[in-house]
Image 1 (tube, rainbow over the protein chains, first blue to last red):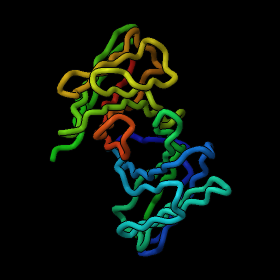
Image 2: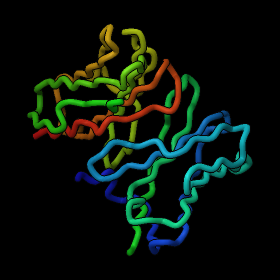
Image 3: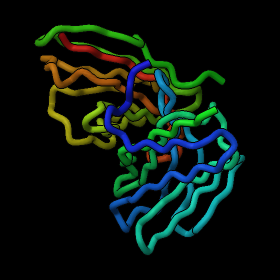
Image 4: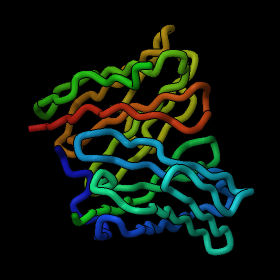
Length: 111
Length: 113
């Protein structure tokens, strides 16, 4: 599959460990945030979202934390599995309801 | 329910040519957005269509255009292709205009020789 980014920051974790992927966003007026996962050769896949009136939201094995004070978003993946290996993007909704994507982080899971 | 379908998956063109890419949204979704993904620039918004009307447009030259049909299917067109247009073009659909989250197709990989 094609590479979505040749110089992406990379997080390497051991299978079974927890992963934390961080994202800084730019617009303090953004009120909605999404995490997407992109596997090689595929389009971004929705993982979890959070609105600005929340600090934390949990899904299945994933948790998103939002710190509006420092404009920081994180995605926590519990018990990371080889199938979690992918590029992860955070995205924010700006004025006009357009998605603005971060640069992405490559997660590599070592068996 | 079938996901977002993009055709073709791969395309090779030469400089100066034009190209048309197609996107079929998830059944019942009426909004379609297009994005360009490159290693250098990441994912960038091109435009959004809803009810056959362009609702939003990103910062791309006029060579990039699109349209939406009454069945919500969308096409995007790039004219006078340049080497820098080589990219993965992604289509995403959502229920209504501005509705989130958007659901993405697997893209069309366009290579310009």
